[in-house]
Length: 321
Image (tube, rainbow, N blue to C red; front, side, top):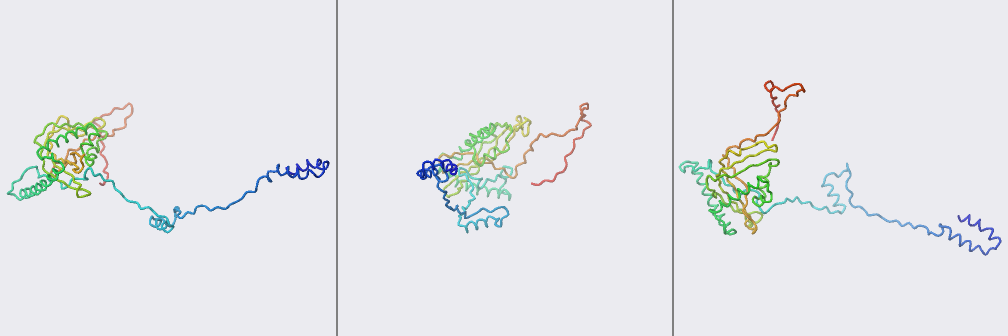
């Protein structure tokens, strides 16, 4: 571009003389962008140095301990990972010193060896219960072994009534966090029908314990109540078929229910904590399950004859528990 400007101004420069030489150079410098812009300046900079590079696939340092030692050698502090477990201090994780019901729930003769052993065990349990009752009364002055069974039976009935109606909010206030999953587990897509008819014997306190957890002064009260009542229970599956029990046939039920309270907390209350099933208890009836038996593949013009069809037997399958 500068060369073309010089050729265009050459005739004018011959006519007017050499006075335009300086002006021509000024015009060339203004019209030439290469002369107007200063040359670029390159400044070398250094990027951030990485002290520790994560190992790639197939590297030598594969184990975590080797990676940690390599990071420490590079000056990188690896944060320690703590395996923490969440605990709930509003209730205990189990039943402390559970009550051992006598076999058959009957008193044997003290002249026999088994009866003498049973009497000795009852004396030990009653002595521990009296000490626990004193500790409970220090935090709950209204507690009484004579009036508590009626209150415990009301909690028991209300908890099972809320279980059948699936009222989670009220159920949490009547059972502990340890007892809740045991009562709710397996009830999805099922219909429960439960009713409390009458008490065959008045409920009574048979066992009291006052354990502590985490610290020495963090006390919990556990009271075992014996309940002998008449109840009805029926469980239906999601198709409305009966799986267990009957709504029309009542049954006599003997239960040992454990109630617990966090004595140190002023906002705590007595809640159902679990049940004690003795070793001599009879096994439960099996659950009736509805299954589909595969039948023969019939053609549209054929009819099924039940008398001539044999149900195929299942094949033996090896399993483990």
